[in-house]
Image (cartoon, rainbow, N blue to C red):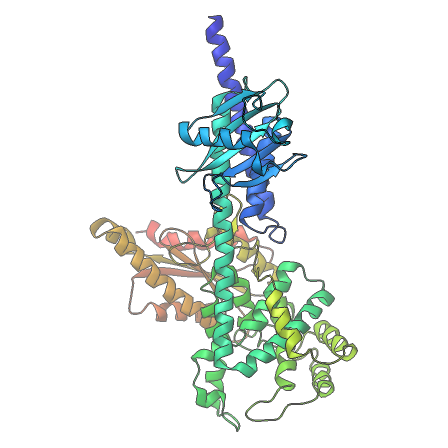
Length: 545
């Protein structure tokens, strides 16, 4: 009986310790990924894993070794070390234990490991006791973590606890690698779009590069945080993406535009929004571009937003772009002086431009030494971190999964909730807002009779349809659940709930079969209640049949 109780007590301790490993590593990874400016990707996660292992094993130093010998020196590569007074990269003890772990695929412990006859180094003589634990990545051996000098040694630390460390550390390394790859993909997508604009119009790209320098100053004057600053910079660089789809004859026409031609040009913010918004991390950049032609008095396009209902990035971009357009040549007019452009911006404050932003920008221009040189502008572009949207809906959150639906690349139900909350904040007490829900009626039958691949294709088609409708309305589309899509649309001006209904019905005229509903926000209503009301209204017809 006593032996049974002792074994049970050891098991309980092991379970408790394993939970502590998991909790500590998850919390530290969460902290790391919540600070994108601090993280440089994979190396930070490796450091975190080693430091957590040392602390949780109650050692005072440690080494992380790779299973590879990348430099072909005959030794396993020491990736990181912590706590040593002497460099352990040539540690004979570390090499011996790492190779034994590789060979035997098991945890190894030892007291006084340096007393084994091999040529010991100064770092080896610092090791009084150690444990060597295998780390796995996707079920493949990835490396070894060695922790040293636990008071009393490591013999009484349960294997289950140490194996849990290896499992959780491997998961943490995988999380870090995926996070690093995701950030690289987002930066690559942004640079690809920037290069596309540059190839389309090199002079416009040079103008944008100069405006980026002004945008950095304006962001500081407005007190923007690093995320908002990078979103503004991204919007400056990508504001002309929508022009790529417009006829060159209209864009470069030397004379006044006809009404029809002007309507074509006014499509560019929506086109830009559709293109940029395909990259989840650039969703806020896309929104900034979508509304940068709105006017402070509500007479702009595409949604007729006014005042604070226009996103802050869009208001700032509107001032920056107007200054850039006035101080650079266009096919239909010559460039103007910086002072003339500043005076026009001041004259338009309160009607076209946000008065505060206009004042801050003009003060910055008038106190500067003139427009930045091309060399300075290009240098700034080269060193920009390009983390637009870090930490916002659509980015990979710590252990929370993405807020972007992988099938449609639309925001998921979490992004819908957060976006509805932000839309209500922007609407204020007297604003108008609509939430639309679309349900795919044939999806369950297709999944059952055909295959889930056919069902997935139906969802993707419907998502594209709703995204097109959202772009025309100045709204944002989401995948709310398995067969339900949603859209948030700011109302006002020419936009009404009936107009939203018509746009959705028209977009789905050719299929797939849907049921849809549009509800308007009641002042004082919470975002959760608004979305719940839309869901209930969508389900109500089915309940009555």
